[in-house]
Image (cartoon, rainbow, N blue to C red; front, side, top):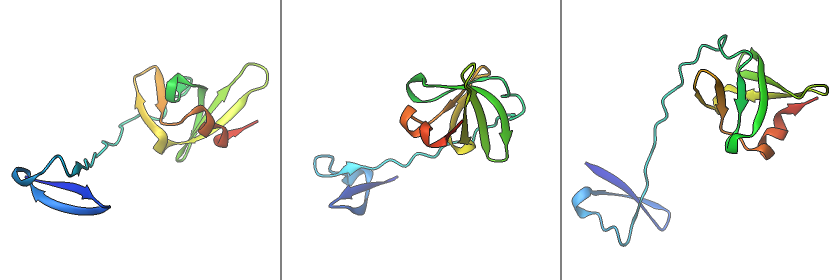
Length: 108
């Protein structure tokens, strides 16, 4: 097995037995599995962001965009890319987006 280490912003390949953990920081590459979501099933489910930020209720899915509506009288709409979805538990659709980042995707 070989590991990739970073030193002075250069990639160095060393075998596991040669790794000097005092001088090198391991760089881990994580592969994310694509989510298998039935996009028709998420309509009317709650949408949440990072730190449980309320993004409203999923109203529709348009191509690669999930549209959510938040509010009772003055509804804000969020047009969020599907690529931001990190989990769906059957009740809540979770996005990798902060409250501040979500404002860029908000429309009245």
